[in-house]
Image (cartoon, rainbow, N blue to C red; front, side, top):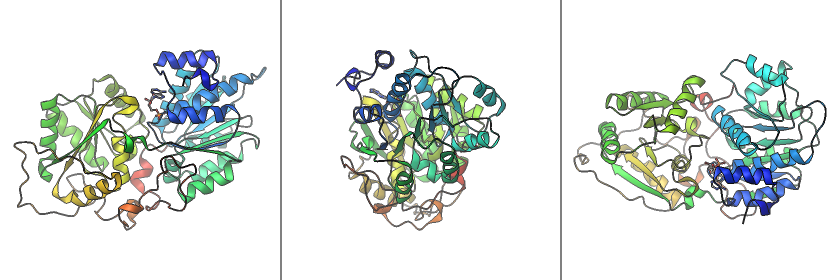
Length: 445
Ligand code: AMP
């Protein structure tokens, strides 16, 4: 199937071809015709499926089909949970719309509002924003959303997790009633369904398989190691295999900082990326990582969410996540869009249960690799994983996010069932709305 056969214009197909895409991904093949017809859509897809182009391409085309004369207004609004995602989506809008006369703008918090106000005085057809800062503009009356024709809520589940529901509702209240609504979410909790019920009219329901569960291109490995020797092993692996563009996950911001510093001392250029860092520092780290200048990026789950780094060769779980679904999200950073990737997990005795939960979720055993010289010391006993420990440990083992008791492998976040025609019913998120760490990670205010 070709992009042209989906009904996209020559200018858009040309931009996509220049980007190097030859065929639409499954979400694109399904979503593009629906959106072009003008209908509402509920899309079950996470980052890595090609969903951004899935809504951006038809959105651009819809705007082009109805050109406006005279004063320009914002005609499409894309809301994203994080600054990084806003920047990436807006970059995609510019890329795919490069042969079109449309203008886009990204808007997020953590940066001076005045340049944004100035940009809003000029032409903006498509606004990509995080809810917090957009609300600030609405309150200051520096943005006019009264001509929005298309609304996209991207990673809606994450927006709810981050406590944006009130902001979103306030934004919805100022939009014209008559508009096209597109909602994308990796999971379908009751909260999401409630939001969708109030927002969407006769939506088409499209789901694609969680590609990273089905993705055989990701080589997963478990490296058993003593808890105090993880950094040493990581340095060894990176140097031994000459790994570049390594995304390393830790549980906490503190752990991310510490590890980045230690790797740097070991002669491996590394930086931590998380919500406590300034926007400028995060942008710089990401840019240097993408070009390969920065060998290692250390991130917490929330900071990494939404970062689109295509064809990332290595993901390392320095510590396993407490929530097994986060493992799937993490390794989804690698082996994207048809390229191979490696996901390595450094697992100490404390994390045995977490590993079991993950293997139960992904329904396979992850091959174990013992590295000579890093044999596990059988005398070391398992310890609970403590909050903010020196080792960068996260929440106490046995608890989900937000301090809710964990209820076992099967009751984490519900994921869309691959191939199902409807959003999965009933099973909401096991974990309560996230706590402080979650919020600070890229909240757009
Ligand atoms: P997304 O899910 O939108 O974050 O996209 C995931 C990755 O897939 C991005 O790096 C895109 O550049 C890439 N991508 C999107 N559509 C296609 C396509 N049709 N063919 C190949 N790669 C694609």
